[in-house]
Image (cartoon, rainbow over all chains, first blue to last red; front, side, top):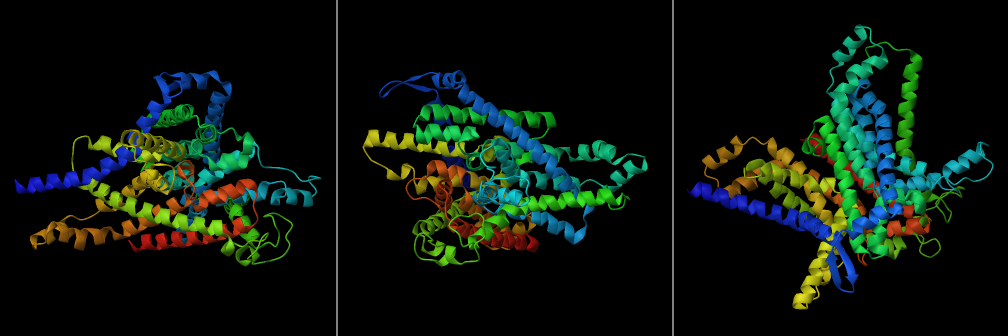
Length: 289
Length: 283
């Protein structure tokens, strides 16, 4: 039939760019990177398939320590982001009404339209030895000389939490918004305290937003490069920094590719675990933002 | 806690203080960056030496202003070029993907949808290196087999555009598909009944309906491309976009000319943000 033929043709016309885009730019490059990662150079221009690059990762404590450290700090940053964002999201969703609500919500989003580079630059100006906070503390008489606040782990965490805030506030506000006020009121009427109402009613309802916020924040933090490198300096020991070093500085692409895969594996494993534990799908979590 | 439930004024004040503190935290870095663009000092730090426009307009070292700083201006130009290409590509493919997923049924559609979301889950650095590896394999293969040197497969603007296009397309697909889903298909049927061809229906009915989503997705794509750093860093050649130029300067420690650029970036983002809010209101 004519009609089904033309339908078929247009399907093929739409599938072609989709397959080309995803195949040539995402799937095949990753397969190629995997092939590179299981290749070992045994003599100039001769290569052998082996897991030597992965063995090197597990054999050298610096490498796997860096990955473990990156993962742990990312989890810490994610949890902190959640704890800082939750009261703010609750305030916007449940306490404010009407215009002030939408204005405050927009205010939350606005800083994140600005490049991450500019925001990180701001933190550098605030925290460095000649920076605002050091000067302020001296002026207040709390410290006697200039103090360097950059290049340590706490600074990196502060920067990461800052950068991730948007991706936590947005899903939290949208799930809290859908919580019926009368449920909270009923909780109080039945004699619940602020703490027990939050624990028994608000948090269970907000769980889907909490999970999707945490997953997105974790992924972005683990794969972040700019914030840990600029705020943590040489001591930051961030895994993406290690990947950059292998690729660009040492030109050891085989090892760098193996590192890339390990990072991808850790990231997907933790995301998968989060989705399984919460019974959500990737589409419902990521596609919302 | 709800406005309808009485609370002690102490806890209400404490809550308000926390919210205020939170917004100070959000806005402080931006205010600091902007204010030091006007400080008459060679470093973006205290003490405050008085107000100046030099970091925008002064024409010689050591106080080279933004408007005379060749490499920064060139970076802006390159970023605009890259963002323009990426927006055009990702909106075209994003629109076609939206139709594919909203209008057609095919085998493994669910699986294809999941694959379509993948670029959002892959860290930007890794997306960058995988494209770097693959294009290098291709370039070497072509050189060894045909002895052609395809320069554009080596790190450079072409790869930067492709790398950003790879993940921004997912975002534009999602934005455009969300609007297409709400489309009332009886409008198209009516047009068909009145004798319109497929192409005419698309041009006069469906695409105009999608316009707000396409414009919104373009704004997002442009901004994400302009500000992208992670993927770009891995694929950049000798022509550096603005973020890379700024990053190199930042590492060395720079004069407040970087603050001056940042003021422009903030103004640009604010304008685009307001534009997209106005557009969303129009829906």
